Amino acid sequence: MGVDYMETFSPVARMTTIKTFLAIAATKGWDVQQLDINNAFLHGDLYEEVYMNLPPGFKGGKPNQVCKLLKSLYGLRQASRQWNSKLTKSLEADDDILVEGTDSGEIRRIKGMLNTLYKIKDLGQLNYFLGIEALRTPSGINLCQRKYTLEILQENGFLDAKLAKTPCTPGSKVTSSEGILIDNPESYRRLVGKLLYLTNTRPGISYSVQQLSQYVDKPRDTHLVAAHRLLRYLKGSPRKVLYYSSNSELKLQGFCDSDWATCAETRKSITGFCVFLGDSLISWKTKKQATISRSSSEAEYKALATTVCEIQRLLYLLADLKVNKNTTIPLFCDNKSAVAIGGNHVFHERTKHIEIDFHVVRQKVHEGVIKLMHIPSHKQIADGLTKALPITLFEVFHSKLGLQDLHSPA
Image 1 (cartoon, one colour):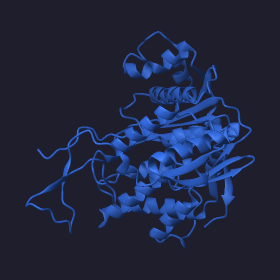
Image 2 (cartoon, helix red, strand yellow):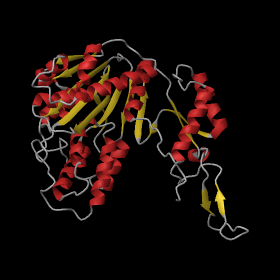
Image 3 (tube, one colour):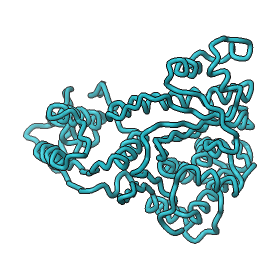
Image 4 (cartoon, helix red, strand yellow):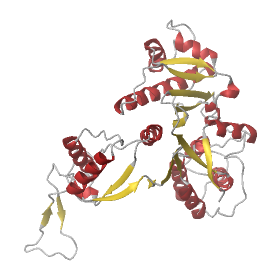
């Protein structure tokens, strides 16, 4: 009773997809244009009968009259889905939605078609989108969130704070029981939410933000101190940008690592991985594993499985973008036992207890999709995504991510 919708889910592009597209555009020299649809949600078609109360100030001829909506309206639960459906149909009816950007005339034609249907705001060359600044040069594309970072610092009063050289103190561990509950947990949750979005261009803070995000339900003063340490690092760190070179090869390679039983309360391990398209870092993640691992080899093998699934998804995306290199993807891991488990098709005592879904690694190795490669721990790029590093190692980790300095400190 009172429910006027059946579906509300609306597909959205993952940031990894956007970064992959931009990395390819930089290499191929595609012309990247951006635009905005005016009053987008008002264009969605409704498939259910939806009624609403009369707007304030509007008087009907009869008592208790209501409006029957013919089009979508801002505030409806199904508005975003209906708009996505309408836009998809428009693009598929006109073209195959694959406008590669090599033909400026085709880009103008697509913009004209969309403007006829919906009225668009032409924003020209790629510049600023979703809180991310983009700078296009002949050598490539730079992505950063400097303006967004300064807004976070200003909101929390850290524009004049003492600087920190790393996002978190090496060896420090935050727990859910130490410290006292803070009086304003909403401010902590809001801060962590903004920091999570900042990781879209700042992979170096991924581990720190992952640690902070575990305690948003009942944040304590110790968690707030750790968050303030991260803000002081953002204040003092050079403005690192993601750099997508125009001279990069379009070949995937992955690095994965884990920190075994790192959580003092649950003894779960941390998975960290990063995937490069040539020299361009397009995907990374820091996440606590769902189950407890009985050994470091098992923890590393689970990290391998997570990374393999991400690589397979990226291969599907590259195929859709007509960038399909039929080469085996190297995946680097610093645990020889995990590499051996991934290449061994015989189940034995050390692997029988591992859940079947993690053996996707063996399947993809057998199919020739990936090739597991051992790498020394000191060369493992994903190491900084699983633990807090001291200054020297953190600087090395940062340099391996392929980031560049574009701005001076705040």
